[in-house]
Image (cartoon, rainbow, N blue to C red; front, side, top):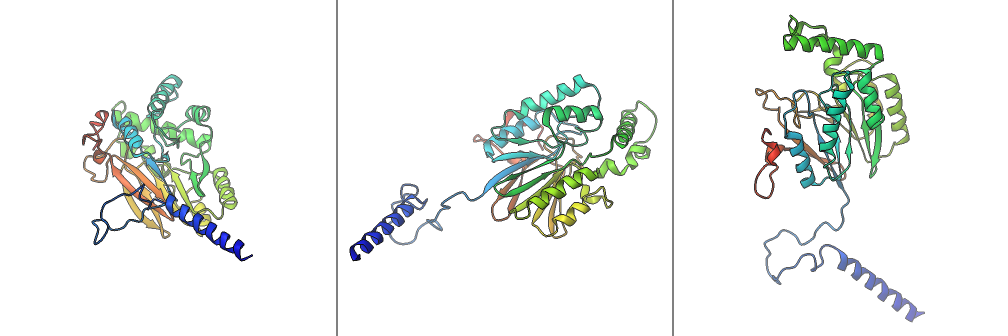
Length: 332
């Protein structure tokens, strides 16, 4: 019996030694010749395993897309190598019922996106989902306009902020088309005096009851996730009625979550309901030269115990030569 106990103890010590040998503190990973005295590094203990993951988010391409910026972002994303990439909408110029033109725009976007070396998650904005034809094309190419997924016990709610009944959608679409003609000088008028300009949906979007019920069920079925990310194009959380985010925020109140949207083309961050609410800038979309927060960037989120969010200006992501991708000449 005594001999058996000794053998067991020896075996445990061997296993413990093997485990230590395989850690990143092993000399085969980190080697040096300093054997005594102080060292010029702070610690020889390295992260033994990857207990986290990193994902990226791109913002608006359109509303005045600048050539070359998005394809440069694709190159930069491949260099950064996140686990996957999310979008917050306005992926094409859209705003038309011309199926050939829409196919051309989507093919262009998809061709550039196909060069990513990791999964990409589509999300629609007002440029992508402004009429029944565009909704139909979205369904054919990408399936549902709103959806959710889990990755490593983190929940992602991908919302449709252009979620209107068809009659209201067409009213918005027609008012928008008229406003664009005013801007182009095709008809007389002042943009700020158009019907479209005063529509709440223009800036804040809307969420229908069916979508709310969908995400309500998702939250009920996933009560114990590590974190919840809520992504949308327009800032539904700024709309105060039942078509805004408030009903869903009430269901989110007892869990950690982060809300992220685009549409404004100007970066901002605020604390709302003791949570982070972030409006992204652009990843190739039109910019206001007078707005210092209107810049091209990629957001990186390292999901550890809680998210560590970093926004990288594209004009600071350089290759090994210290250069921007050649296609990114217009990044700023």
